Image (cartoon, rainbow, N blue to C red; front, top):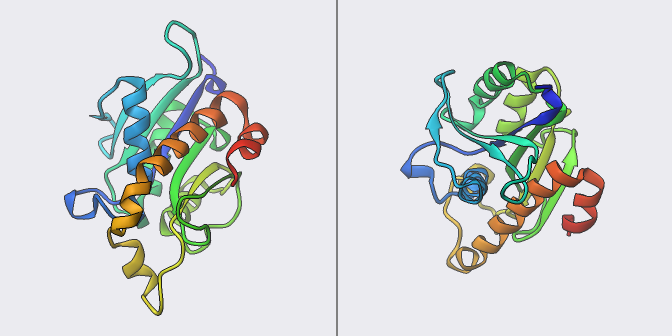
Length: 197
């Protein structure tokens, strides 16, 4: 198997029930949807620092690309170590890694995909960049918008979605999962044309 056959898709978030509904945990929600589509359940990986689901994308019976869905067990600002451990274990280069994360500078309900770029103050991306030695991995950026009024950014990302947002959230999660599949199966350009709203 060549590394080109395998993609590592990482959902960024914080582990534990306390954080489950927070805006910062959109990556976990999208990963859950992708795991559901693959018909898999998360299991502890032998590196000991992440839970993973392995499968193939594409219609049943086809030999689509292999994919590893990874939910690091560390907090957001330390996510790079577990991601690096998985990338090393599976021999996945950065250009076959997809990070799914919340994005303040995009309105709630919208989505952007891109390759590389800065971390824009996002501690999960900063940690990944530091551990991988590069920022040249794909990002599926799920918009959460800016905090209202003078609310502190940290408080905002570590708070639950509003009642109105919770009604829309399943659509955003579903669309982000579609975008991940499109990125792996069809490439960045097609995905950006379709999903960069």
